[in-house]
Image (cartoon, rainbow, N blue to C red; front, top):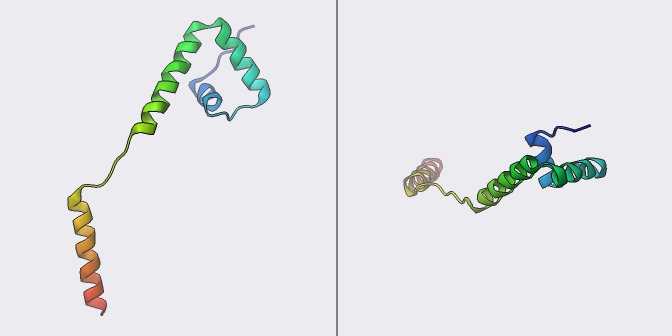
Length: 77
């Protein structure tokens, strides 16, 4: 009997959030099903790319916050 695994199952496996029984079932399926291995590789690549993403606010946003803070301090002082 073939067990079908969802992308969510593979994500939980990737992040080591599955039970030992689920790990064994997924690993057995990965040995036999190349499409499942491909799906797992895509998820691994996506996880690596997510770790590389770094975002920061625009300078304009930071300046607006600082200006607001100055005005608030001045108004309450």
